[in-house]
Length: 208
Image 1 (cartoon, helix red, strand yellow):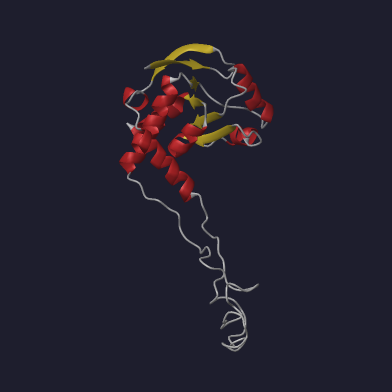
Image 2: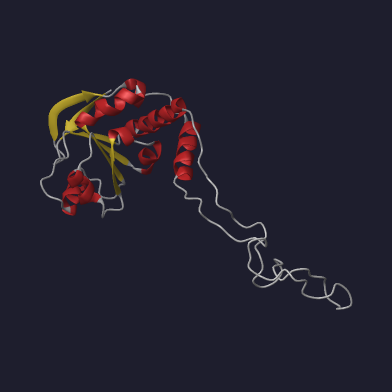
């Protein structure tokens, strides 16, 4: 499929680029998208939550009262979970939430997500994102030029661009990624993809 190339002012440059049909026009696999997004979110979890069970509580191990004749239930330890300050029953312990997925499935998920955005005509190819200054109004102006103020935008650059990154980090509805770090979660999070022209070849190389 062919799409027009725009400049930062939102005007067509007259050029067109060919987007690989094997990436942007496949039969989408929703389950692959689900699994890849699930893995992305799970792998971001620290898993450092913790609690103390009765074996980890500091306290006397002396039997606190006689077993019979008190009229109450028997109790053998002050660290009993039933008592205030006692251990936690079935408490959380540190663990890893990491999920492993095959590379082919992750590649299919990214292609499927890109296909959905292409079908909805929510992809803009921009010649470059070069800015001389670090100013948030640069990115706000970019969104105004393309009339996408109320949309979540993912900007895909060919290589790390400090000015673009720092100009957008105060905006909650804009995210910046390099083409080699493009994830299914990022694509599905955004309503609009703005792709730098020279980054197309970069991520087509490892997705095609």
